[in-house]
Image (tube, rainbow, N blue to C red; front, side, top):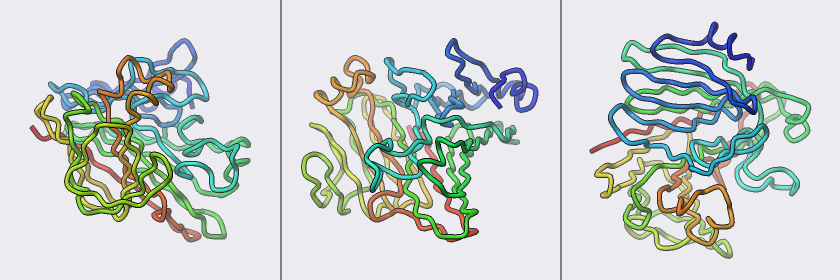
Length: 300
């Protein structure tokens, strides 16, 4: 369902939620309530921005982001599903799966008594998606937009055999300067260092940044905190259904090659991703489900 008039009639909520479209025919959900603002691309169920009322944005969107059917958007909260990283056997399949570039549909919306806005979306299965993933595993994203942001990615197995899923909420966080922030909550954990030949290392203290960083932290279950003295805030990342976390910043050289990160965009973002990656992929039995849930909040 992508007709904006129908969406507004069925799911729009006064003083909370409305739907718009752009020149490319892409549809967006615009949320503005007394607690926060957010924008969501229905393609990919891709949350693009979130800012609690009176605060600078918490979710980062590149000033050079491109919006087009079938293309991923740089920034926001891309959904990696049903695999993380390269496909294990098909090199022609897209990295991190196809969920972030295909149509989804809105299936529910509501205003909470606390003043937040809820919206739920479901991935639309097609011949193209079945060609890459021939399993009966409907997937939904449930978002709650308020003074905290909650995202829950739900995968259900309606098939007759078990399936193995890798996934991630590949969240880009807005920061003052990558050279001055640090990520807490990963001290003492082993991580796969993906810069250069993959190497297993151990984190010592806070994660700090002085070069390209691409790490999968193993057995990561505690809250992570992005400490940002420049913006005088700490972003807390809570999660369930995940035992791995990815920390990523492309730094100068890779950012320049990417073409959609914006002028010195790497300085203004850091990805701290709640994942089921590496050995943390999820085996879902027939009739079972997996829920990857995160909550982002700001502490001054």
